Length: 238
Picture 1 (spheres, rainbow, N blue to C red):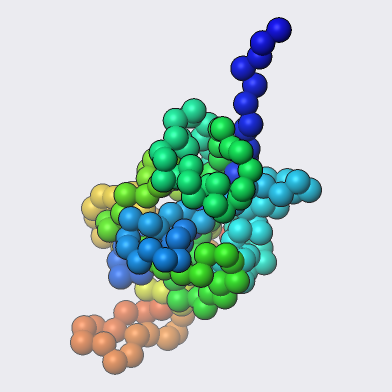
Picture 2: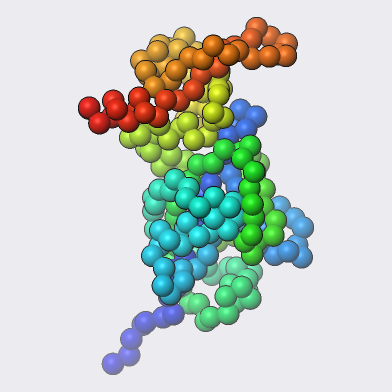
């Protein structure tokens, strides 16, 4: 009996968000070293090794790219359209990078958050990586633009379920204005600052510090910090 079975491989792709200059940034890698153009940028990812779980593969990709052993990861969707790896340039790159005869490529997408000011130690096969503002995202290979679009919806769900996640994008000490701009960037809408202050006042895990900004041209704002112990205590009691 004739079958329609094909060579199908599974990969992981990671959408890593950072926050800088009042906007969301995404960590991208250059897939071909010899091509110095924005259209050759993509999401970091990899085929899954024989002995790996998908979560292990995603952690490996991010460790090789950032040097961070355990980043907060959320698996949010599988992308399996037969057309996602049919572009001739994408197929050529797959053949060069991985050698196997790939007829179909299914990817498991992950969402992660990282402080932009954190020093990244890139030991991956992708020798060039950069933070790209969401507003300047290039047309990427495969369906990576679609994956990013889906991740924006997912990050809002994630924060609604676990508000503490948002603080992984901020410095250890932050102002209410920074937190406000971050929420506006994530939800892509203007948020009334007075209502936002009321919302923050109901967050006992956002703790005011004695320290204020220095050497600024405007009125110095007070710094705050996220109290993880207080958050976990209240979460446990809910």
